[in-house]
Each structure stands twice: as C-alpha cells, then as structure tokens.
Length: 171
Figure (cartoon, helix red, strand yellow):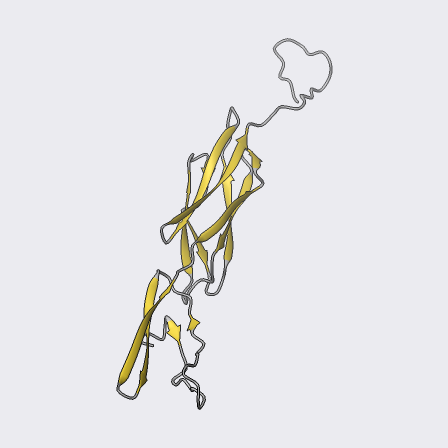
C-alpha cells in the first residue's frame, strides 16, 4: 500500500503451487475525510495496482430526547456515526432551526467512538414551537425534530380566602 494510515496490507501474497490466484486481507483504518489508497502487487516484471476508496464516518442517525421539552428545560441531542472516529477524534457540526433550542455548535466524538451525546438548554416559549436539530459531517446532514412546549399554569395558591384591600398577597 502507498499509505499505511489509510490501508494496511501484508508485505507479501503467497500463491500456492499450481494455483493461479491468491488473496490478501486489507485492513482499512478510520479516516477523517473520504480518501483512497493504492494497493500494488508485483510478480516478476509485472505490476498490478488498484485503488481502494475509504469512506470517512458520517452521521447515520440524530435523535433528540425527549422529543417534547417544556421551555426552560434541558434535552439531549444524540448522534450516531457510520463508523469509528479516526485518530484524534472527529467534530460533528450541530445546528438548529430556532435559537430557542440552545444546541451547541459542535459535538466531539473521541477516537474509535461511534456515537456522542450533548446536553442543550431551551428558552421559554408562549406557544408550542417545533425545532429541527441537525448534525453535519463529511457532506452528510441528518435531522431530528423536537417541540419546545409552553409552560402551563396548573394551580394558584393563596394564603387565606379574603384579603384587606391594598395589602400584599402571598401565594
């Protein structure tokens, strides 16, 4: 191989006596970007070269939990990759359709990791608000929907059933 950071091959190929072919195992390594490497075999005066493409990880799924969040509460965005993160890890760009969901701009996934989770906060809303959260890496974008819910008043408690006019009320 011409680049051992992309492909790893054995140094030789043994073809059994009487056979006309053989095979080798090629190990691909995690890469940060789509790339390729050459595999070259030489027998006598004949050289064979083939190029093998190696895909970088991309997002396969994005989920937001919970899928409905009361405004002012927190949620999680979860990203799953198509393969392991390369040496040094990889950064997935995150986005949102509405800033009411305070989703961080990036999620770091460490070396050999295939998924990551990031906590995010939300602001209060006066009406239920749909938001799309996105994850982008190596020209692939995946999205998930979340609804930020308006808070609802469930009860009002006061001290006493009658008050003196002009006096403060506690509740």
